[in-house]
Length: 302
Image (cartoon, rainbow, N blue to C red; front, side, top):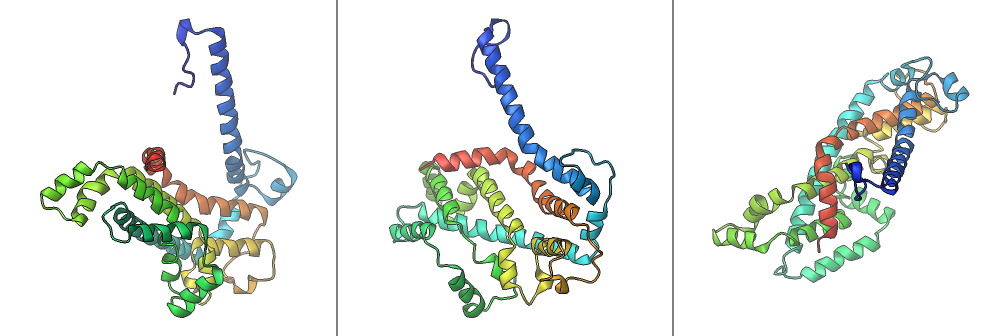
């Protein structure tokens, strides 16, 4: 990638060469500053407790040990948490994209009756929230969804911010394409499926990744809505319990699976970060080619 737009090669001036060198140095410094914490966390997860407490920073541990990972995977509940997190992430993302796309497509059409009213409701929800307690009462008492997966899948089915960006993207698609399809007899659903969605892959991939990361990292909803169904806990809640156990806190230790072995403290925290972030990071390379384009196009349209 060429950073400088000035002269290059034999025609490059001394000033342009210095400018290029400074750019490379700054970018390299920023990259190292960003990557070093991740490298340290991965290394520390394989280090002993003594090395973590005696060495302030290191990249390669002196004594490699798998005690932290043995502790984390000492119970089948972790694998169960993986399965629950994958289920919540896949189903939650599919629900998010379905409701976001269908509502955004409808709101992108000026012929929709009451369009301004619905748009105002969406905008108001971006600034004002109903609050945690009313939300809990609706989910647990009114809808009776407590201790079910629906309690964590439905409350965030649509993000108002993402909805507005997708709507703006749909409005930027040439109307002639949809009019041609309509003349050929296609319905609105057919136009959305055959014309709009194939042209919207960057935006769908980008916001699908946003939704997926949100579901993968979420734990608060499961904590308050699944108190009586621990077999449905996602990975993040189980890892939180492991950190509490590793710290020796009294609160939830009695609720832990007796299969867990005595934990090392600091290395468990590092290993928990690795276990919770690596799976979702593996998804990013497959969507990276759509990511920048999707965000930029969706942000600039409208």
